[in-house]
Image (cartoon, rainbow, N blue to C red):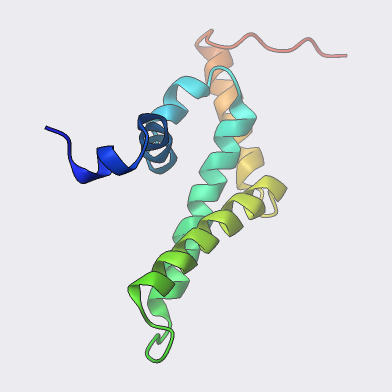
Length: 115
């Protein structure tokens, strides 16, 4: 039996949504692209910060509706991805070096030749 979500949303979009919110996709990706893993980790960190900022603010009034909250959440996700791409906090660099070190140590990733 199909639920209303599976009828309304194509299967590919459901998989993308599931991988967007879970870290399962990151586990296999770390061997291929440590930079992408580190960027996504920093984006998760930014999302947590933005969510806490939204939760701690007084939000009563005209613009306090579920539609507005959903719009703000999507905007916060995009902002988190944009900020993570710049790597201003340096978390991306730390995570990337940690992933590279651990994958090289266990032989999962071949180190690039140094020039």
